Length: 507
Image (cartoon, rainbow, N blue to C red; front, side, top):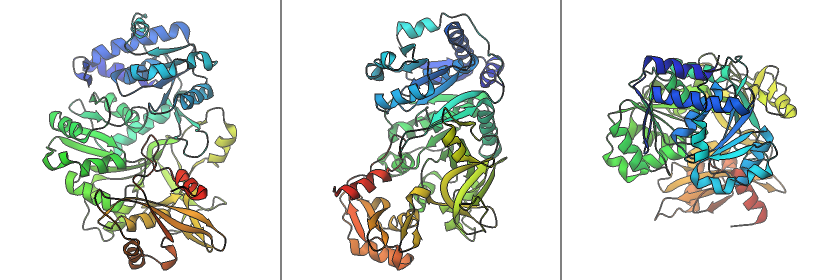
């Protein structure tokens, strides 16, 4: 079960169809397969099956061709986000024992020293150079035979708390993920276009697989995310799908370009990777219509735990429509989901516990970290670290990460519940709620608030909003107004930094 075989099957069936387009031009499937098999041949001359190859690259066609070349040669890819610091990339390369590191031109100067500093690395190779072009001189190598559970991708967590861990994803895991896409999200064929505005090292790159396996056209927009360019591309190509983090989706909705956007070619936007608040989701639905699909997944079970379908998003006649939009949907096809207590006992419907899941998409474990693997994969289930509850219909609603829950006076307070309410204020753009140590109560609630440009928000108004919707003990005891919330490279709010600000007394 080599993932690369799927690409070669498409190339035989649809050789002249466009495979990847970018500012540099378009590669057909025949041309892409030819490049993949020659790069794979060069890899096979110096690397052994199972070796790891790291990538720290901005979005470009070379990212996708390197993925498939590695798999064709029986290697494992280790993608890293292009916005990481070279020291963070060095840790990942060293942790995974990567033999090669690929970089794009704007990043290579910062990464070149790693060739000397990371013992396992045999080279740092920059795309667009003679050294990269020499890989295309290798002998054509058709995909090697690999076992389904052999590693294909090591997905390093974003590391918001402590060192990132490398979730080992096998060929079977990624094939299951692709099949679940077809079962739950969309049927695909060569008339579809996948537009890449998110990093190919993350969700967008993972979901290139089900698209490429069906002959869909990949359009890679280089450079920084720009809503106007994105809307222009949607208008230009047929049957467009794209992955967006909630923060990106919200930027699209609030952009000037949204008002004149031509969306007739838009098929699906699948979003995930962080909370999508109901207030923002309703605005997105008003713009995009019933084209949204919500994903709940983790690097440890990529993109495939639960989902809220396009039809669910449009079900305005649902008796609990507000709750539906605030949830993360139902278990994906072939996936089991349950909510458990500290002793791994399943809790009754409506009670909050840790979300656990299992399926053929579940990781093999954390690379070189048996202790973390044993903590996360217990009794055959992946323990996500997310707190949530299910109802009798199987609808899963997330409350928070277990580490973000606030315990004040013995009562559990879930920040997301408060954030949802505070975002109803018309002048609030973003909000994040954290706990601050308190001598008497253990913790007290603090809300960091970003006002919309040119607007001011009065704390008494926010207090009243909370009192009108939630129990009195849940309301924030302090409001901190900031220009922006700290976020990691995937757009997730770094609550650890907010808590550190409170500890240090920083403004």
